[in-house]
Structure formats: structure tokens, C-alpha cells
Length: 206
Image (cartoon, rainbow, N blue to C red; front, side, top):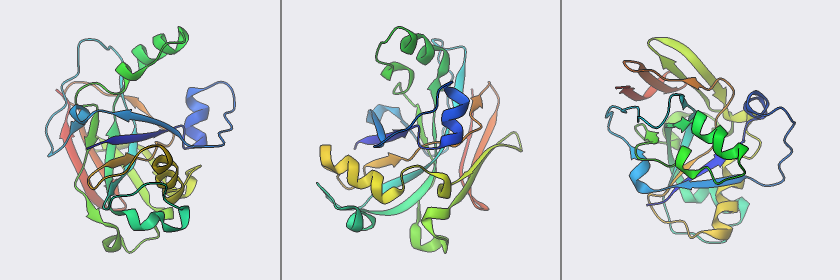
């Protein structure tokens, strides 16, 4: 299984993290190993190498067929389920590495950093996937919300682009980017992720 992630895919989020306006011509892709996956509602234990662990709420696609060099007009055939996921980021570590011009994978791809909820068939949502509303609640309060309508690169574009470089296999996951509103998590926080009113993600911070 491969975990693909799209960085900087919402303009408002880019503005909250970067002082300069970003104009991307292509999706910004990074990867996480399968050891990053955290599912089944298991708790996340904050590691001791970070004092600023942050959530980034995202829509996650599940790849359903083998594909390579996929045309954007056919890309919708290669994913059939979606859910809410959290791209956990050691923000303090990431900022230090970026400032030094160094790779920042260890701030993003560490164990259990890719939290994923319960997948549901796209057809069951009865909503245009390019207009999916989603949000994250922490301790009963909504802290981040977005809609896929605001994505700079849509699902089909992302899947087609990734397939130029990597063969997609059944079960691969694609984290499609986070909107504005990222923030820090703390011990004993209770996180719940939704697509519309459908709760698909529920776990605790330890």
C-alpha cells in the first residue's frame, strides 16, 4: 500500500502557512509509508520529538483499480470510496527543517501520522464529489471545515498526475489536501471527522 499526499491544495491554507502567495502549476505530492497509517479508531500518542503536533483534515480517496498514465477524463474510474483523514504534522520540526533547506519527511511521515476514517462508497453520498463539505470537531467544537469546491487541483487531476510517476494499485490512498484552520492537538483531545453530517472518523489523543 502507498499513501500519497497533496500539499498546498487550498489557497486559504497556503496563505495561513506562507507569507508569499503560492502559484502552483502542478499538484505538490509527497508520500508516507504504510507504517504511518492509523485506522480503526485507535488512539494517537503524541511523540516526544515534537512540542507542536498539528492536525490537517483532508478528504481521502481509495484507489480501486490498477492504473498507470491515466487520462484525467478517465481518472474517476480509479477511485470508488472516500473518507475523512488527518495528516498529522510535527509543525515545529517541519519549520526547522524547511528553514535549513532540508527534506522534511520526518515531520510528516512518522509512524501513525496518517489517520484514516471509515470509507464510504462515493455513490452513497448523493453529492457532487467536487463539492463535498467536510469538517473536524475537537472536544465537540468545530475547528476546521472546508469543501472540495475550493481545491486548487480536483480529484481527477490529482489521480491522473500521480499516475504519471507511480503505478496506482488497489488499496492505495490519496490524501487530497487540507483547507485553512489547522491547529495543535493536545493530550485527551477527542477528534471527530465528518463529510456533511456523516461521521467517519473518531479517535482520541493520548
